[in-house]
Length: 463
Ligand code: FAD
Ligand code: SF4
Image 1: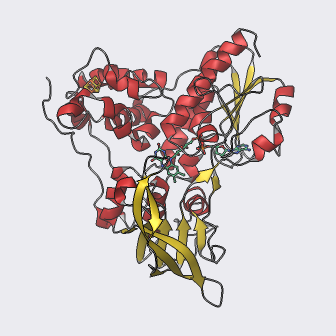
Image 2 (image 1 turned 120 degrees about the vertical axis):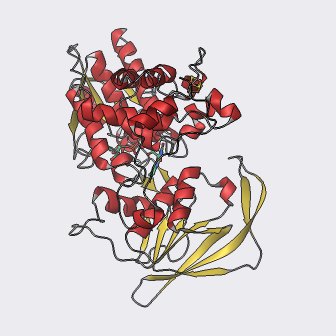
Image 3 (image 1 turned 90 degrees about the horizontal axis):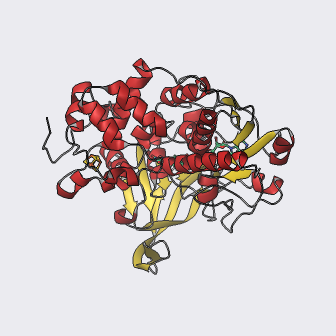
């Protein structure tokens, strides 16, 4: 029976006053009845416009139809054919600018809640579904550098073609930003571990604590008999503003702060690498990373947390949902201000952030209106911690240790967008290492496309 409602079934979630004191997941996910009712909103469009917005090409109408018929196992099989990390994507994908943006139901109301339905299906499959068995081996080995969404997707796809795939990861845990960046309350680490375990059950081998470029180079991997190498090493090098006082104690990059909190679990009692207690925190930036850092700081017990952003809320790159959640939890927004210096006390701890007010002029090359300082303005914020969340770029190690691998002026590896092929024979690249900081699903799309190109090139004897 079709559900004609023009709005999505709401997602149950923790109350703001409660969740701000814990790191448990904010959203609870649909029940079976809610998922079925939401699935009944789908029109089953023959031309599948929603699929054109999905970088890994999930057959969205088919899985939703299976859900509407109550066959969650069939829905899960359909999703897994195209997406190796559905429980991750169902939680963190920006569906509003991907599949849901193309949904016909969105023309006259809210689109079908494709992301929530994907999450429901993937969570069900984790509990009741079966792992895919390993494919028949073709006797050829391939290597993947980095275990973020790009590397994991590439590895899963190659394993399905029958390759013996090893993923080399610098950290002690696989998952990339999914484990060291995105906080537990948005993406529980047990979910990431379970999806990685499914890939391992399918034959993917993960070798942690291996820094490619130090422990072993890309050329050494090729010489060791890996026929092709995919580089998905991400964009984990933080950017700083270059203002006076940035080296004071209490000033963090978002990368360091979130790694301590998420990967090193600083929020747990007895953590071996705790975070210095903070009372008044300013987070500089307006993206998802800034929202995550601000919401973590609140949960760690800060009295006040402010986002400091040089444009207005309209230009903020963070997902609307993240801004809404941050605001609900009590994060303050200082908009149209930009820090110019940080002042410290005699012990070298940051105590003040000095900012100028900004106004917006003509759009710049990013299409957003350019912020310019208001002559003579000054705003001073009292702080004892500052978190810089103004972007990141690829770490130079791989490009410095791999001859013939080209990079652009932003430090990103140069690779063909549709295939991941680089100028170096046998080496492919994708995800944030190529695009700069982007999204999980774009990284996954790049990993999938590169795996297909690697298979094609190996099959045709090109590498
Ligand atoms: P990464 O996830 O960065 O993985 C790269 C991996 O390579 C890492 O594990 C790294 O340790 C490893 N590595 C690096 N160098 C080497 C080396 N030399 N040898 C071996 N291993 C190496 N996107 C969304 O879609 N939705 C969100 O809500 C969202 N929130 C985010 C929140 C935060 C805090 C951050 C930082 C990012 C967020 N993103 C989000 C962006 C998204 O996580 C990234 O675009 C995505 O993870 C990129 O995937 P990747 O595989 O290219 O790189
Ligand atoms: Fe269903 Fe929307 Fe896709 Fe149409 S566009 S098949 S309504 S999800």
